[in-house]
Length: 259
Image 1 (cartoon, rainbow, N blue to C red):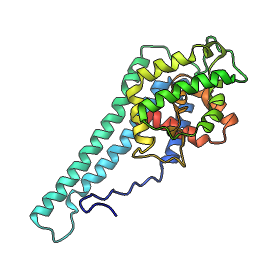
Image 2 (image 1 turned 180 degrees about the horizontal axis):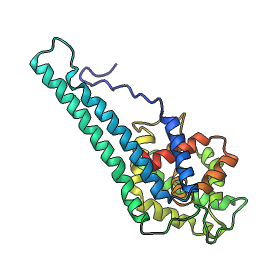
Image 3 (image 1 turned 60 degrees about the vertical axis):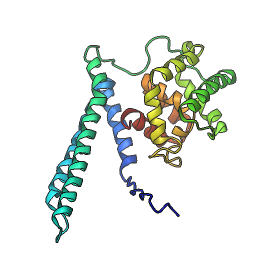
Image 4 (image 1 turned 180 degrees about the vertical axis):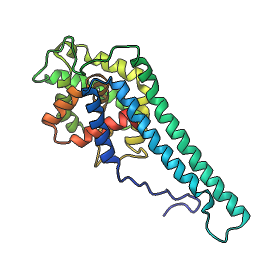
């Protein structure tokens, strides 16, 4: 039983999240294939998301006068205050959604759009990644993951199964220095990674290990780094060998739009 003074948690309703993650990933891929820079694709999707939030804001405002009948003046003020609080929060969410996508989009305007996300320089593909390299990367991501989450109950067997696959999205020329690259990425994105794990990882508000196990696993660090670097290449090697396309779609959604 809960403590008498403990406030009950509100029910979390997630109906369209999976379809939305898949749709946004699909739209981003189509925009990039049409020649849009990845940052511009993210900005356009963010603007659409913000518009949907503002539509919800308008509906909330319409309920300003819909307090239960027979209310007293104090309860009427409480109702109005609640409506204003929710409307204000939705306004903040809409603004934040666009603002988080804007800096990258502004930078993209100063650079010529890349015709393809496939890496152009030093990109010898690898058919397999040696056990020694897998263990080096695994030791690194475990150390960083634990430092960010304090969580040690991850599935190491699963890590050893997934890492050799996603490391195929690292070129032969970059394999030797990849541990250093990961450490630099983790240092640069530490706050963002911490938010990702705090929301969707162990004990996170939106954790759902059954539907998306990666935020509970250290190799998610490699997935996020590759999503920022070669998303199509990662998508290709993942879908070729791992029968969990929606897991990658969800993590893509979380990393790009969910924090």
